[in-house]
Image 1 (cartoon, rainbow, N blue to C red):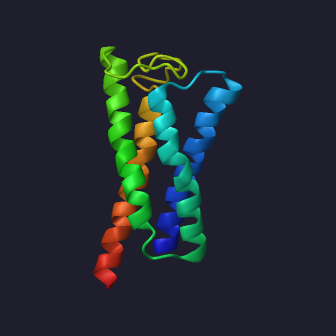
Image 2 (cartoon, rainbow, N blue to C red; image 1 turned 90 degrees about the vertical axis):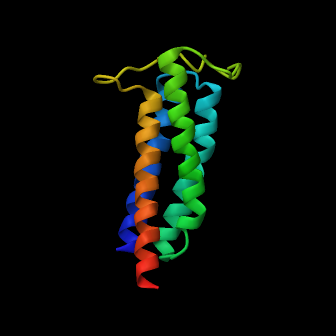
Amino acid sequence: MRRRLLAGCAIVAAVATVGSLYFSEVMHFPPCELCWHQRILMYPLVVVLGVGALEDRPGVWKTGLPLSGLGVLLAGYHIVVQTTGSSGVTCGVGAGCDAVYWQGPGFLTIPWLSLFAFALVTAGLLALASLERRTH
């Protein structure tokens, strides 16, 4: 069960990583400063969780959870900035943090996709932590 949870989390992180690269490198959407920070939190999760799944490491959730938890908070903040247009962040890296380059069905934007990915990884890691505490 542990390996499957870790593998699932690693796959979510990998899809999010490939998706962010697709938006910037293929679609040529410039990532804003908040997007860069979310990438900094997401990209290592691919390696950390992938290796944890391959090696069946029991405590890898302790490394992944701070990254994914901070990612949830940062993506949530990015959604607020994008929807209200107000930001305390000066986005000089690429685009403005309130810019909407892609609109999916309904309310979906790139920060929402990021939030969903971080939330899925966080939920998986919390389930893993709970599973391990019950077995020890």
